[in-house]
Length: 264
Ligand SMILES: [Zn+2]
Image 1 (cartoon, helix red, strand yellow):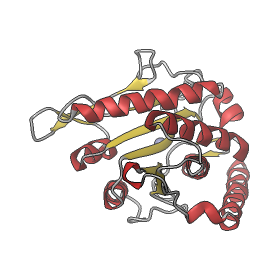
Image 2 (cartoon, helix red, strand yellow):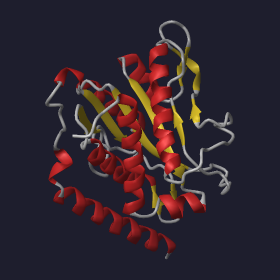
Image 3 (tube, protein in one colour):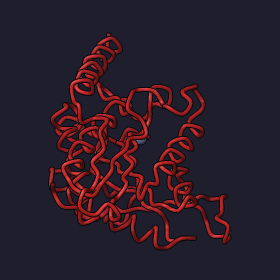
Image 4 (tube, protein in one colour):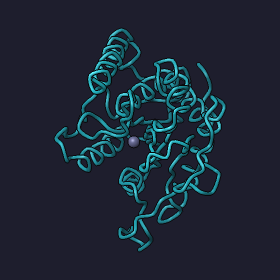
Protein backbone atom coordinates (compact mmCIF):
# COMPACT_ATOMS: atom_id res chain seq x y z
CA UNK A 1 0.00 0.00 0.00
CA UNK A 2 2.80 2.33 0.97
CA UNK A 3 4.53 1.49 -2.28
CA UNK A 4 1.31 2.07 -4.20
CA UNK A 5 0.89 5.49 -2.59
CA UNK A 6 4.52 6.29 -3.36
CA UNK A 7 4.14 5.19 -6.98
CA UNK A 8 0.90 7.14 -7.36
CA UNK A 9 2.50 10.26 -5.97
CA UNK A 10 5.46 9.85 -8.30
CA UNK A 11 3.14 9.31 -11.24
CA UNK A 12 1.16 12.45 -10.45
CA UNK A 13 4.38 14.43 -10.18
CA UNK A 14 5.68 12.87 -13.41
CA UNK A 15 2.52 13.73 -15.30
CA UNK A 16 2.58 17.26 -13.90
CA UNK A 17 6.18 17.63 -15.02
CA UNK A 18 5.55 16.22 -18.50
CA UNK A 19 2.58 18.57 -18.91
CA UNK A 20 4.77 21.44 -17.82
CA UNK A 21 7.53 20.49 -20.29
CA UNK A 22 5.22 20.21 -23.25
CA UNK A 23 3.35 23.41 -22.55
CA UNK A 24 6.40 25.63 -22.12
CA UNK A 25 7.88 26.76 -25.40
CA UNK A 26 10.96 28.15 -23.71
CA UNK A 27 12.04 24.75 -22.47
CA UNK A 28 14.16 23.85 -25.47
CA UNK A 29 15.15 27.36 -26.35
CA UNK A 30 18.52 28.89 -25.66
CA UNK A 31 19.06 32.34 -24.28
CA UNK A 32 21.92 33.92 -26.14
CA UNK A 33 23.54 37.25 -25.58
CA UNK A 34 22.59 39.69 -28.29
CA UNK A 35 24.82 42.52 -27.19
CA UNK A 36 28.11 40.75 -26.55
CA UNK A 37 28.15 37.15 -27.75
CA UNK A 38 31.86 36.79 -26.94
CA UNK A 39 31.08 37.04 -23.25
CA UNK A 40 28.41 34.36 -23.43
CA UNK A 41 28.54 31.83 -20.59
CA UNK A 42 27.50 28.24 -21.23
CA UNK A 43 25.88 26.66 -18.19
CA UNK A 44 25.05 22.96 -18.26
CA UNK A 45 22.57 21.89 -15.60
CA UNK A 46 22.75 18.26 -14.60
CA UNK A 47 19.65 16.85 -12.91
CA UNK A 48 21.24 14.05 -10.88
CA UNK A 49 20.08 10.43 -11.22
CA UNK A 50 17.45 8.87 -13.50
CA UNK A 51 15.17 5.86 -13.64
CA UNK A 52 17.98 3.31 -13.52
CA UNK A 53 20.33 5.18 -11.19
CA UNK A 54 18.01 6.12 -8.39
CA UNK A 55 19.19 8.55 -5.77
CA UNK A 56 17.38 9.20 -2.50
CA UNK A 57 13.92 7.76 -2.31
CA UNK A 58 12.20 8.16 1.03
CA UNK A 59 8.51 8.54 1.86
CA UNK A 60 7.06 10.18 -1.27
CA UNK A 61 10.35 11.74 -2.33
CA UNK A 62 12.04 10.51 -5.53
CA UNK A 63 15.33 12.30 -6.10
CA UNK A 64 15.61 11.79 -9.88
CA UNK A 65 12.26 13.48 -10.40
CA UNK A 66 12.89 16.25 -7.84
CA UNK A 67 16.24 17.11 -9.43
CA UNK A 68 14.60 17.31 -12.86
CA UNK A 69 12.02 19.76 -11.55
CA UNK A 70 14.71 21.92 -9.91
CA UNK A 71 16.83 21.91 -13.10
CA UNK A 72 13.87 22.85 -15.26
CA UNK A 73 12.97 25.79 -13.01
CA UNK A 74 16.61 26.85 -12.74
CA UNK A 75 16.90 26.89 -16.56
CA UNK A 76 13.72 28.91 -16.87
CA UNK A 77 15.07 31.49 -14.39
CA UNK A 78 18.56 31.64 -15.90
CA UNK A 79 17.09 32.32 -19.33
CA UNK A 80 15.75 35.62 -17.99
CA UNK A 81 19.36 36.84 -18.13
CA UNK A 82 21.43 38.03 -21.05
CA UNK A 83 24.69 36.40 -22.02
CA UNK A 84 23.96 32.84 -21.00
CA UNK A 85 23.19 29.64 -22.86
CA UNK A 86 21.66 26.90 -20.74
CA UNK A 87 21.56 23.19 -21.46
CA UNK A 88 20.39 20.20 -19.47
CA UNK A 89 22.11 16.80 -19.45
CA UNK A 90 18.74 15.10 -19.24
CA UNK A 91 15.25 16.34 -20.05
CA UNK A 92 13.31 13.16 -19.28
CA UNK A 93 13.30 10.55 -16.56
CA UNK A 94 15.80 8.18 -18.26
CA UNK A 95 19.54 8.67 -18.66
CA UNK A 96 20.16 9.84 -22.21
CA UNK A 97 23.62 8.24 -22.36
CA UNK A 98 22.94 4.60 -21.52
CA UNK A 99 19.93 3.72 -19.42
CA UNK A 100 20.86 0.15 -18.50
CA UNK A 101 20.92 -0.83 -14.84
CA UNK A 102 24.50 -0.78 -13.61
CA UNK A 103 25.62 1.76 -16.20
CA UNK A 104 25.87 4.70 -13.79
CA UNK A 105 29.52 5.40 -14.61
CA UNK A 106 28.82 5.35 -18.37
CA UNK A 107 25.91 7.70 -17.82
CA UNK A 108 28.05 10.09 -15.74
CA UNK A 109 30.80 10.11 -18.39
CA UNK A 110 28.10 10.77 -21.00
CA UNK A 111 26.87 13.77 -19.02
CA UNK A 112 30.39 15.25 -18.85
CA UNK A 113 30.96 14.54 -22.55
CA UNK A 114 27.72 16.30 -23.38
CA UNK A 115 28.87 19.35 -21.38
CA UNK A 116 32.20 19.26 -23.21
CA UNK A 117 30.45 19.00 -26.59
CA UNK A 118 28.49 22.22 -25.97
CA UNK A 119 31.64 23.99 -24.69
CA UNK A 120 30.42 24.33 -21.11
CA UNK A 121 31.95 26.95 -18.86
CA UNK A 122 30.41 25.19 -15.92
CA UNK A 123 28.50 22.02 -15.11
CA UNK A 124 26.12 22.38 -12.16
CA UNK A 125 24.88 19.04 -10.90
CA UNK A 126 21.64 19.23 -8.92
CA UNK A 127 21.03 16.73 -6.14
CA UNK A 128 19.43 16.08 -2.79
CA UNK A 129 20.91 14.31 0.16
CA UNK A 130 20.00 11.55 2.59
CA UNK A 131 21.60 10.25 5.71
CA UNK A 132 22.74 6.67 5.10
CA UNK A 133 22.18 5.89 8.79
CA UNK A 134 18.72 7.49 8.57
CA UNK A 135 19.72 10.09 11.13
CA UNK A 136 16.70 12.32 10.62
CA UNK A 137 18.33 15.32 12.31
CA UNK A 138 20.81 15.83 9.44
CA UNK A 139 19.54 18.68 7.32
CA UNK A 140 20.43 21.60 5.08
CA UNK A 141 22.35 22.46 1.93
CA UNK A 142 25.94 21.97 0.90
CA UNK A 143 27.92 22.30 -2.34
CA UNK A 144 30.66 19.85 -3.27
CA UNK A 145 33.36 21.73 -5.20
CA UNK A 146 36.60 20.71 -6.99
CA UNK A 147 39.62 20.18 -4.74
CA UNK A 148 42.64 22.53 -5.18
CA UNK A 149 44.72 19.86 -6.97
CA UNK A 150 45.93 19.86 -10.61
CA UNK A 151 44.01 22.96 -11.76
CA UNK A 152 43.65 25.36 -8.78
CA UNK A 153 41.72 27.94 -10.80
CA UNK A 154 38.91 25.40 -11.19
CA UNK A 155 38.78 24.97 -7.40
CA UNK A 156 38.66 28.76 -6.96
CA UNK A 157 35.82 29.14 -9.48
CA UNK A 158 33.87 26.20 -8.01
CA UNK A 159 34.26 27.43 -4.44
CA UNK A 160 33.10 30.96 -5.23
CA UNK A 161 30.22 29.73 -7.37
CA UNK A 162 29.25 27.24 -4.65
CA UNK A 163 29.25 30.00 -2.05
CA UNK A 164 27.09 32.19 -4.28
CA UNK A 165 24.53 29.40 -4.75
CA UNK A 166 24.56 28.51 -1.05
CA UNK A 167 23.87 32.12 -0.07
CA UNK A 168 20.72 32.04 -2.20
CA UNK A 169 19.62 28.65 -0.83
CA UNK A 170 19.96 29.94 2.73
CA UNK A 171 17.73 32.86 1.74
CA UNK A 172 14.95 30.33 0.97
CA UNK A 173 15.12 29.11 4.58
CA UNK A 174 17.52 26.18 4.12
CA UNK A 175 20.14 25.62 6.81
CA UNK A 176 23.79 25.10 5.93
CA UNK A 177 24.53 21.43 6.40
CA UNK A 178 27.12 20.80 9.06
CA UNK A 179 27.56 17.08 9.55
CA UNK A 180 30.06 14.27 9.35
CA UNK A 181 30.82 14.64 5.63
CA UNK A 182 30.85 18.43 5.81
CA UNK A 183 32.18 19.31 9.22
CA UNK A 184 33.67 22.74 8.60
CA UNK A 185 30.42 24.67 8.95
CA UNK A 186 30.75 26.46 5.62
CA UNK A 187 28.66 24.11 3.49
CA UNK A 188 31.45 24.13 0.90
CA UNK A 189 33.20 20.78 0.79
CA UNK A 190 35.74 18.88 -1.30
CA UNK A 191 36.29 15.13 -1.35
CA UNK A 192 39.46 13.44 -2.58
CA UNK A 193 39.74 10.04 -4.19
CA UNK A 194 41.72 7.64 -2.02
CA UNK A 195 43.37 5.96 -5.02
CA UNK A 196 42.99 7.95 -8.26
CA UNK A 197 45.48 10.67 -9.22
CA UNK A 198 45.67 13.49 -11.76
CA UNK A 199 48.57 13.57 -14.30
CA UNK A 200 50.65 15.62 -11.82
CA UNK A 201 50.33 12.87 -9.20
CA UNK A 202 47.94 14.78 -6.90
CA UNK A 203 44.77 13.16 -5.52
CA UNK A 204 41.83 13.20 -7.90
CA UNK A 205 38.49 14.52 -6.85
CA UNK A 206 36.37 11.62 -5.57
CA UNK A 207 33.32 12.37 -7.71
CA UNK A 208 33.67 11.33 -11.37
CA UNK A 209 31.59 14.26 -12.56
CA UNK A 210 34.00 16.70 -10.90
CA UNK A 211 37.28 14.98 -11.82
CA UNK A 212 36.27 14.31 -15.42
CA UNK A 213 35.11 17.91 -15.86
CA UNK A 214 38.37 19.17 -14.36
CA UNK A 215 40.35 16.98 -16.79
CA UNK A 216 38.23 18.34 -19.65
CA UNK A 217 39.04 21.92 -18.51
CA UNK A 218 35.84 23.19 -16.92
CA UNK A 219 34.37 23.52 -13.44
CA UNK A 220 31.74 21.18 -12.04
CA UNK A 221 29.97 21.55 -8.70
CA UNK A 222 27.42 19.31 -7.01
CA UNK A 223 24.62 21.14 -5.22
CA UNK A 224 22.95 19.13 -2.44
CA UNK A 225 19.81 21.14 -1.76
CA UNK A 226 18.47 19.36 1.31
CA UNK A 227 17.94 16.06 3.07
CA UNK A 228 14.99 13.93 2.01
CA UNK A 229 15.46 12.07 5.31
CA UNK A 230 14.82 15.23 7.33
CA UNK A 231 11.12 16.00 7.78
CA UNK A 232 11.57 19.78 7.76
CA UNK A 233 13.70 19.80 4.59
CA UNK A 234 11.39 17.36 2.83
CA UNK A 235 8.07 18.91 3.82
CA UNK A 236 9.08 22.57 3.55
CA UNK A 237 11.42 22.42 0.53
CA UNK A 238 11.15 19.11 -1.32
CA UNK A 239 7.48 18.29 -1.72
CA UNK A 240 5.77 20.52 -4.26
CA UNK A 241 6.53 22.03 -7.68
CA UNK A 242 6.38 25.48 -6.02
CA UNK A 243 9.11 24.46 -3.58
CA UNK A 244 11.24 23.04 -6.41
CA UNK A 245 10.71 26.32 -8.28
CA UNK A 246 12.03 28.23 -5.28
CA UNK A 247 15.17 26.06 -5.13
CA UNK A 248 15.71 26.29 -8.90
CA UNK A 249 15.35 30.07 -8.75
CA UNK A 250 17.86 30.21 -5.88
CA UNK A 251 20.37 28.16 -7.91
CA UNK A 252 19.83 30.46 -10.89
CA UNK A 253 20.27 33.60 -8.80
CA UNK A 254 23.50 32.21 -7.35
CA UNK A 255 24.86 31.33 -10.81
CA UNK A 256 23.80 34.70 -12.27
CA UNK A 257 25.35 36.58 -9.39
CA UNK A 258 28.68 34.77 -9.61
CA UNK A 259 28.99 35.29 -13.39
CA UNK A 260 27.72 38.88 -13.20
CA UNK A 261 24.76 38.21 -15.52
CA UNK A 262 22.27 41.00 -16.11
CA UNK A 263 18.53 40.53 -16.51
CA UNK A 264 17.29 41.02 -20.11
ZN1 LIG B 1 21.98 12.49 -5.60
